[in-house]
Structures are given as structure tokens and as C-alpha cells.
Amino acid sequence: MSEASPTSPPRITLLGIGLMGLPMARRLLAAAMPLTAWNRTPSKALPLQTEGAHIAASAAEAVAEADIVITMLEHGGIVREVLTDGGVLAALRPGALFIDMSSIQPAQAREHAAWLAERGVAALDAPVSGGTLGAEAGTLAIMVGGTEADLARAATVFAALGRATHVGPTGAGQLAKLANQMIVGITIGAVAEALLLAQAGGADPAKVRAALSGGFADSRILQVHGQRMVERDFAKRGAVTVQLKDLRNALATAGELQTTLPVTALLEQLYASAAEHGLGDLDHAGLWLELARRNGLS
Image (cartoon, rainbow, N blue to C red; front, side, top):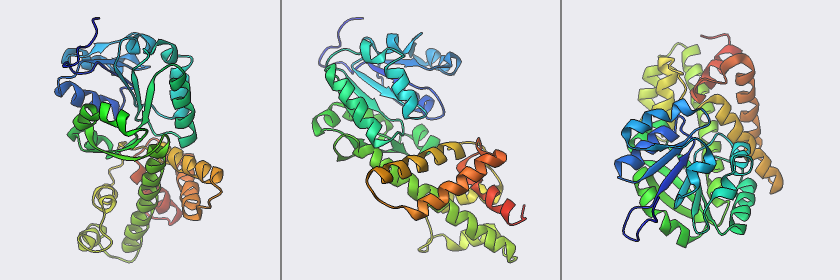
């Protein structure tokens, strides 16, 4: 493959073609960016081949000639594994930009960035909020940690995916994502309890949700996840297990910073209980089912 010219779009590699990675890849292809894709389960990446992407046989092969590498992987342990055992760290070209859009611990982001810097590779931690709907629409909220200069290098990529905000140095993007996931997870619990109280008292939960719309209690969570609770639609978009992972990352980070998060700790216990009762692969709005079970409601 020839070197990209200064006027040509950067050659992008996306590692991780799952619920989020697939629609993100399609946004990049729609923006006419040369894309190489890789996934541990190759069949998940194959639909992109007919849409113009090159499908790599290995992660190392996928990144070998990339200008910008994006990861959208399940957790920090997998990012580490792909970098080391997967050969990505050794295969990356000096001067490339590595953008980790996975949700991992800030300390992991800083460690990975240090490894990459030793090889002359720049790094941004840029986790996202907005779910699969935001990924499909290109409206993701992207929280970026790293330098302003590297953010500028990634501007065209981020523009295809959503709205990027620089929140601080390396690791700060992951701190912002933890804050996001704390608010999401806690608010899902509040909405679930409120709708369960309404149901237990004889009110129509759907009409209570409608009545709250536009008031101080209104939120994106009430609108989207509250609707899922009303409709009992718990098909996975953001899984209970992923929400639990994020809350545990928040608590681990809080411990490193000697900060106490009692509300987050309580919700971590509730999501853990939901996972233990077989709800882990449902949408995180499925916390409603765990709270309903505790109250003998259906």
C-alpha cells in the first residue's frame, strides 16, 4: 500500500466490530475514508467488505499501514491483550495515531499511552456516549483525553462519528466517560424505582412518564430507557454487564483517588444482583426487572 498523500484522507483501521463498532465503521465509510476492519470473531466484520472496507486477518495486519487506529473493544483487559499478544504495539508505524474509544480505566489509558509513546505513536483516549442510536446517526458525544495537537489530527474522524470535546490530558477522556456512566447507571435506577412506585400505587407508568416529560425530572434516560421499561423492551443495546463494568471502573478509580462514591457503590450492587439473576445480557434498562423482582411485581 502506498503512502497517503497530504491531501488524501487518512488510512483508518478499526479494531472491534461489535454493537458500536459496526455502525461507527459505516459512518467512516460513508465519509469516504479508507477503512480496514478487524474483529476477533471475523464473521462480524464481513458485512463491511461489501461496503468497501478491507477485512484484515489479524489485528497486527490491520494496523501495519494505518495512519489512525481506532479501538472499540469490550474492556481494558482486551485492549491490553490486542496491543501486546495481538501484536498491535509492535506493528504500529511510528507517527501513527492510536485512538482508544473503548471504555476502560483512566490508569489503563495512561499506561497504554506510555507504551505507545515509546514506539513513537501518539494516543488519545476518546470514549463515547450515545449508544448504538448515536453511533448510527453520527451523533456520539466523544470525550477526548490527550493533546490538542493530536485532537486536531483526529478532527475529520471525529466529525464523521459525532461531537468531540477535549476534556484534559491522557486519561481524562476515560474519567469523563466514568462520570457519564455513573450518571446513566444511577439515573436508570431512579427511573426504574419511580415507575415501579407508580405501578404499585395504581398509576399508569406510561402516563406518569409522559407527565414528567418537560419538567425537572425529564432526561434522556427517562425518555429512552423509561420507554423501554414501559414497553418491557430489554433487547440489548447497552448491556447490564457493561454498565456493571463501568461502575466498577468508577469505584476502582475512586479508590485510587481516595474518593468515596456511596451512591455508585449501591447501584453497583444492584446491577451485580441483576447479572447474578440472569439479566446480564439484557439492556441496562433491564435493572427494572431486578427491582421488580425484589418487589414481587411483573
